[in-house]
Length: 188
Image 1 (cartoon, rainbow, N blue to C red):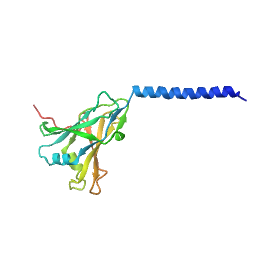
Image 2: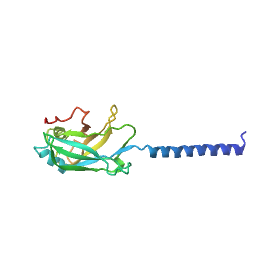
Image 3: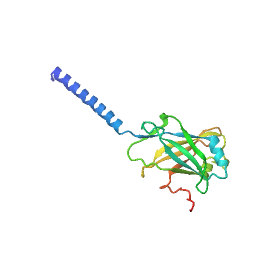
Image 4: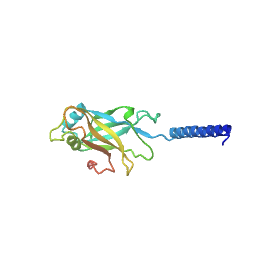
């Protein structure tokens, strides 16, 4: 039979080791944080205005850090409407984060780059039955990381639809390059 004092010491030693391990893991975690990316909303009023424009051919989407000193704040997105020659239409649209609870965290290698979304892709997303949906609240951009190449991209969903049948439809905003959906660049 084991001596009661020895058993008590072993138990305290095990508890101390577990506590030390938890402290070391939390210190390591704070020194090696994950990058966070917010899910963001693109307002329907702005999307409909851009899609009604004959000038707009695609969107360029860029990452924005709301606070570079605070790496725990998730990246958000800026969007620029572009014409067929690559020129800008209007100013950048800052896309509102859905909330930090919806932020995706990625550890390890993550490649950030400009992303593009073609006007035709948005029209297809909003025309699942051949008729364009105008009665929606926003497009929801949700962050993903490509499993093979580690680049961050966003899946795009129609948010809070008031017409039935289109809630699961999506397209993606992918980095350009390496994605093959890069818009043709104007020749100088």
